[in-house]
Image 1 (spheres, rainbow, N blue to C red):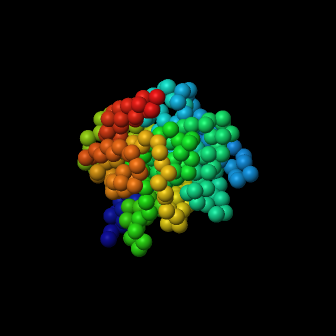
Image 2 (image 1 turned 180 degrees about the vertical axis):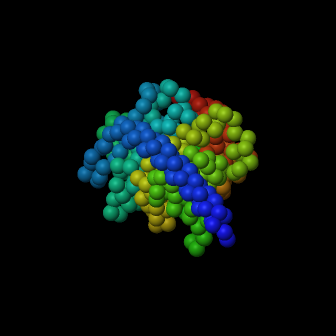
Image 3 (image 1 turned 135 degrees about the horizontal axis):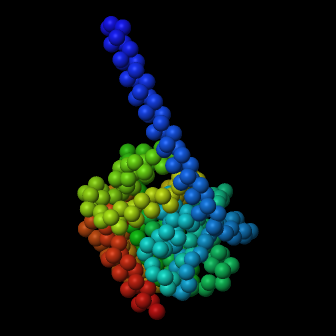
Length: 318
């Protein structure tokens, strides 16, 4: 290699490296800005301090009380976002951070039963005697448990893309779940995925590529909102791990559930298989199952029919 060629290669490497460092610097500025926005959002919660432990929560709206239980990667802020997406303004949304999410610690002997008991204590503190309970994704088990353990306080149960059972023992964790766990341990890595690879991260979260390809501008905007509301991700990782551990340790009883139940799920959900919905429908008395052929885990492409079903269900309760 002659001297001139070597210089060209060196100059090329320097230029590429400089551009890369510039892009990193620009992205980190935007990352810091988004973390500041997230920090401001997270400052709006309250902490209920009881002898059993702390529970973080927030409320919005007026009307029929609706307790919203978020899925993996969520928190009270994700619950409030779900409330805005799925419910109209005539509902009082109570959103909690479940065990291990944001400012709700994991107790020493965490269980789904104990989590449901914490919801019951919080509602008593808020002087709410009856509520509709909504469990989305990994929020499903404790939503079912609340309806079972406190039937006199549960006027209705809604399960949306919800987990209803543990996976069979010995099941191999899918590769995309392992990748999600890695991404969850870095706020910057998750931010990069959410900003530069929306379809990729949504695919790992159970939204098939063909579903994403058909998203309307409104649905893409909702998808970005959903991804953004999970910043900072590292403060939600412990809860994700705890959810899986609790589910392996205990069964979810359903024999005491007396309230009306609405179950909605998409057949192409690649994160929580729709057999969870079939299981819940089979085990919960008086439940109504609505299956969509497509929509993925978030069901954003089915947002209008989901809203219609939720509204009809809540109106019927009155």
